[in-house]
Image (cartoon, rainbow, N blue to C red; front, side, top):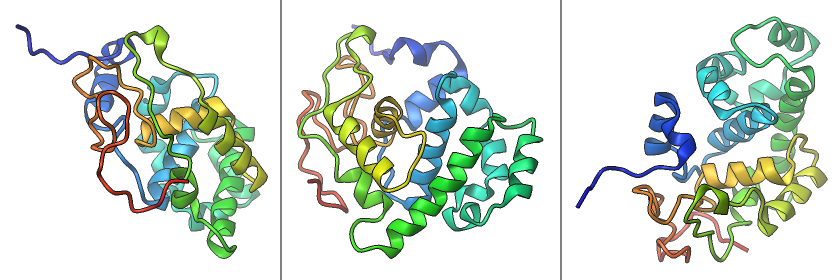
Length: 207
């Protein structure tokens, strides 16, 4: 019986995607900077391929100062022009300006009563994850991603539609979209293979 790893189709199309799938996709991210980076990169991916983003990831990190929300929130029009001239990143003015605005929204969450960014995102962890048996069965949105997208928009975030937000949720372990036959199913430790939650505690309480 073969024990070779089994992956989603998209993860087999390029070595960079394979490495991302095998080591990162679906693993929990709980820190503010890590979640802000992933939220930003998912927004830049909108309308493009994730491979394009991965190839530019280190350039993005350099251009956006490691995605430190405090540093990015202080960007001004000179920084926007600098970023638009940077061939290492995706040069889209609306997405650049949204990233700066989102950094400011992250800081507002810190200052206001209620959840910060990690607590807010993880509060929308579903009761069950999908259990796809094929690429066609992997959902693009969920009720929780729709609700989280609405809440993020209400709090001043941009480029956070339900599809982008669901991509974020599955990327950082809030939901498990690995195929049921994948060697990475349940890799986060937060989900059982059948899509039910595991007993592993979270640093934040889901809703």
